[in-house]
Length: 245
Image (cartoon, rainbow, N blue to C red; front, side, top):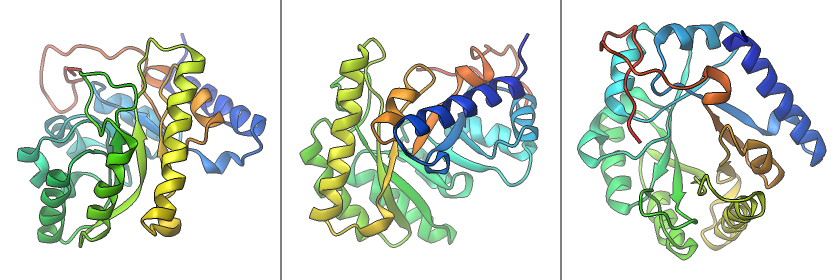
């Protein structure tokens, strides 16, 4: 049975092949191992295989796991952030991929200033229009959101994120990824965001190669590395935690 290290090696090989196919350096894509619902032991195995970027969906789960996780991890918040949980985010994460409102921007900024931290944030777009997903529904709504992010004191807007409909075809999924890339290019000009605003967080276990072909710089991969998320009976820091949608 393949180990987490085996799975990571395969994912890295496929990322390298995907970047070669579109004439990009492999270093242009950053792999975020999605550890939501996985144990600290599983994170440690991926860490031992050289993985340093990990993604979590919930503040409470990150709080439970981080004290026992290996040092030097770059933590990414990839799930929706509730405003009432935002105070804890600057102390736990370096990246937030899921900012979708001015209110959340302002709340994160206030708490980051108070904590003396800087957060790299990505603005989430819901381009497939699914009611179950957060994110700005129209790319036109991203411009005022970026303008608000650019005047924050402790937030650095670095790019955009999206999650397409998992039931979509390759053509439909790639069209969503392409729209996000085009939005990024327009926003860099319209808002004068400069070189810092260049990240595209898009692509998961089932579609990351398509995302890379359309310009992804951050891919969020869980199942292909860790396997299906286990459901825990206990809630100890070494035990996997239950993860909702």
